[in-house]
Amino acid sequence: MNQKQLEESKTKLGTGTVDMLLRVHEDALWMLENLGVGCKHPDIQKVFRQYEAEGIAVVYDDRIYITSELVKRCLETVPGLNDFFVPKNSFFIGGTAPYIYDDEEGTGGVMPQAEHVRQVARIAEKYDVVAGMGRGVKLKDEVEQMNIMVENCSKPLYFAVTNDAALKRACEIYKDRKNIMIVFCLTRPPLTVNENFSEIFFKVAKAGLPVFISAMPMAGISAPYSYNGVLAMTHAEVLFGICAAQLINPGMFCIHAGFPTIADPRIEYNPNYGLVSHNLLNILMAHLNMILDLPTCQNAAATHEEHPTEKAFEDGKKGQALCIKYGFHMIRHPFAFLRYLIDFSIAKLEKSIEMAGTVTADDAPEVEMPVYDERAMESIKNIRLGMYMDDPLTTANIGKIFVE
Image 1: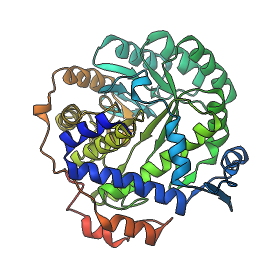
Image 2: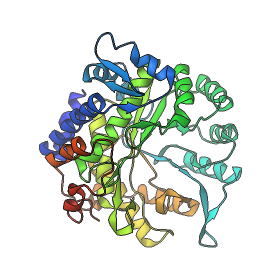
Image 3: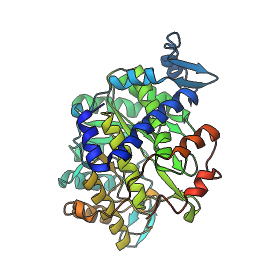
């Protein structure tokens, strides 16, 4: 535990909220030990099975159960914040939109081309307020995308690896420059490994490349509709990935990229990234991880607007200001993305970057810091691996938390 960060978090968030975050960690440990994580990959099962004789892991019926003792051991081998190559309070051009927004026509849905990636990478390189970049938009050829990013941006990068050719190129890049991360959404709700990525995750961890482990439980659907409930579910899923990586290759960099999300009942329970509560939720996730001395990257300063309207920029400004006021490590999606992170607007990217250079903590909206809600763990123990739309806690909290 990072004691200095613990005291800093108490000063910024309040003791009650930090106590909530520490209990979130304990709740996540309970889930890993009692609910486990579904995983069929034989090599990942094997690295956990070797600890069965000690009684600190169990592999049964394609579920892996991990005790708090084994999680503690794994966290002790993860390089901490001071060893990591990205400083605190870093905004990234991150994420992966499937489409480019046509800023001249005012429409989305344009298929991205290599020139779009090149343009984004050069913008990332140009502005000091941008600490690094993810892909921004997705090209079909992962190796081509990596090459464009590397050639045009010297700052820290993260990108996907889904095949052996991409892994080979990523290893070459990492040998030349150590400031890259490989992004995985290793799990899918509820507490299950996405087997489409388990084999390549194992290979990337074996190769020792820094892994950027994402997870996105949604409050009200796959997690309880409360701050500590969705934080705990998100944390449990990412902790599983961190433990797997450390057992495969102890001492490798792991980035906790848990991305707790809110299902908004007003929009048919779709995610709403424009809520002030969404920004706060992700800032709280960042603080828990920094207290645990884990490199961490969350989502904030996005919008629910379909077009780059004034409200879209105001949403971004509020999110950026909240991040600046309360502190964070890395934030993705704070500049260019539109509704559901589907369209990427280069005009919005540049304007939002310029805005980030002038935003201060004084621009942050007032927020009410949450404290621990006992009902969240009651819901988890009752629903276990089910869904939470009909959970009494969801209906009780609608309109009372997770607000604009």
